[in-house]
Image 1: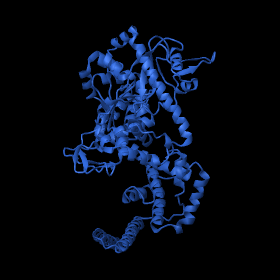
Image 2: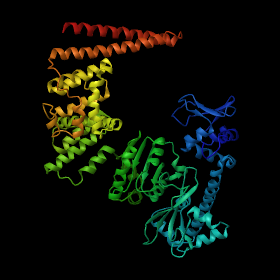
Image 3: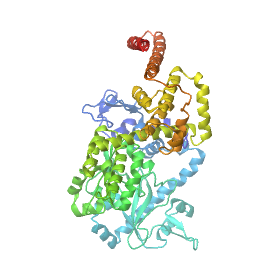
Length: 614
């Protein structure tokens, strides 16, 4: 388990009342020896979520979600296993330090002390704010209400060299503990300890378990930087934390969230009633933050500043988020630099309307690439079409491709059919590059001596190939020898062979023949990258006999017949294995496979008859 000994799991399950714990998140009604309620993991009108104290488990008969109290907390609080058991231990007054591994125990004591110091500091900053009228006026000018100040624990660090340090020392904390917590620093000039934050608005940063792990500090004067975060530590890692975690208003079961740049955006949006609002600790999203959001939400709206820095941050975040199954939208605000300023100027209702007009990733990217292009200029228009079609290649839906291709046509004045032809060309090219990339990784394609050796190996090892591979190799060699033969073969095999390497060669050949009518190694490099030419060369057989259409047809039929025979053999083996079982399901499977086998045999006989007629 790493940090804790394995026994900690059983200890938590045995000492936490699962009914009481889960009832803190939902209404449960006693039904026999269990309790029941509406499942929190899927929408339902009739309760099907059951919890059993004697079994120490829950189970939903609607969506099949089940587990123990640790599993439940991991789901509801979006925590990993270690964080979940620590959360349960803390909220139930359980001491699990006895289960810590020895090395972790020493570190854990220091981290716990840092949390304690941070809470002390947060209270200190809050008290300092109460007595500073100018800072309170600053917050009032920004339309931050007194209730919101309390809700977010906003405070003030006075313009003093070491005031907080002296207060903490008086409270009994050692220099080592304070330095480890990062609330103070050591001067490089004189070696004296001083406060990390001075003359700044202080915003406590919480983790998922509501612990104060650090602080964000905004300059109130001309001091740079404008925003300053606590330094990285064992307990505060900016790449893993989103500002807004740990607050109850961000535990809405809605499946969408809003991502903003700054603390004040989170604070202002929350003040006017929005939920699930988060800000990253830097200018763009990290892998860890994206993963956490994707687990909990189906839709994410970027509400970043629309300046260059904000747009660049979105650009960096999109490739990270696009790996996950999450609907990404972008809110483009005008007449305000960020959500905080927009709501201050135009109010909540206008902001809600803007949220309804968010754009998808495709349209955001199109808007970005159009900037600075002049459509009266042919070169700029070509650049736009080229880049816009690249965006189409990222879309999964064919309907979206056609819709957006029409938009590109309307924007550029180029025929829709031409746009789609260009899209198809690029799609083929992309497929070739993807397959080639996979082949590069497995074959180390940069080693041309190895590739040339493989050319020899193909001829030497042809006798050891399967019948299907030998037929596909022969067809590929014929395809290399003639464009007409290539077209016939490509159409007959549906654009791919069973052998993935031969299939890649076929696609590479398609790219080549789209530019030239004859394959010639010496001139091929004028039309294609050298590594692709070298790859195709291994299938060039100068001694191949001239092939006519009759011989080609026989080869194609033989291939289909061998594929069919191979499938027959596989099905026959599966039927033999199923015959050993006498249960009802196995008998049903046997009948289905027997029917499939009969169809394959008919198909095989048809190919045999066709072969005789040629």
